[in-house]
Image (cartoon, rainbow, N blue to C red; front, side, top):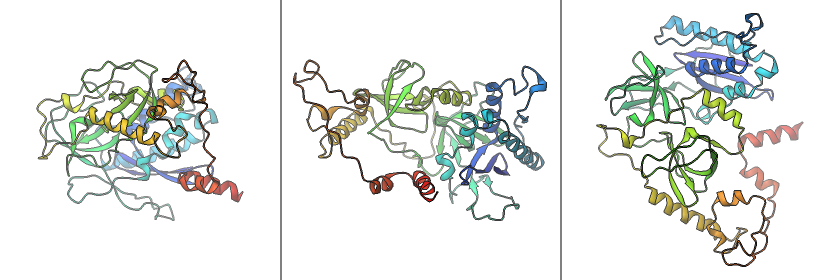
Length: 397
């Protein structure tokens, strides 16, 4: 069940799942419409592309580039009807991965941006839904973040927007690939995040710190390095992501080398490749330009962004892996094994001991020691809140 409230061009949807849990999510209309087009492509018969009489997927109007109060209210009603019809479609559609990914809770849904006292001309996203008895679920207004344009940008497709230095834009959606959907006056479209800067300082408060433990990803497209601090990788290579930057150029590790690589050419190991391809349907296929390539960039901040050099990434990465290998509770206690990265461990995930010929020292060190299984209390302490809730539901039933 979906309860929808409309505010300007961002919508709050209350999604009720089969376990009776209710989750509040935030979606922009352009994303919902792009999802609609992807759904029609995935189910052409049900979309009526082959025979109009077979169409069961509901219609959805294209976004308008100029909104008024009346069109916003009409769109709210249209989206409510669309979502209601969508979840009543046959299970192969309503329970498809594409539909579930649209309504799945994202990190930004659980931590919406808070109001900043120094920002002006921001769009407040507030609820006017009076049909719900419990209004405490919506804690307060949601604000679209304001950013400043640091250099002139000319659009290269009809989905992008042309901006000029000094323009103030409001961010509707921050895609991990570095393309952000924004609004500037009556113009809306995608722009590179590298052309934007926060108003309250040069640093991005949402940008995560480096994770030198690394997350395993696989490249979906080859890329040849254009700058010294980038990596050249072929399609299908397994790498480790150690720093996810908001401009879409993540820092990855391949062996002992590190460098920037377009995040849009990566998908995480363990995820279905079909899901990654569905996400790409809803996003651009060209990496955004990096800030270092922008000419005549002008910032309002006296200090620039603090960027980490690749030498620092490599040095901290080696130090982290050495410290991890030297811990008392680590199964590999030899100094030679301590230099292995998570990628090397993953490649030897079957715990096959190295032969004497392949061992650096020419000796067989034996099979790795299997660590003891953690207690149920420790597992419950370290698992996510969502897992705890599922375990509690199973115990009660």
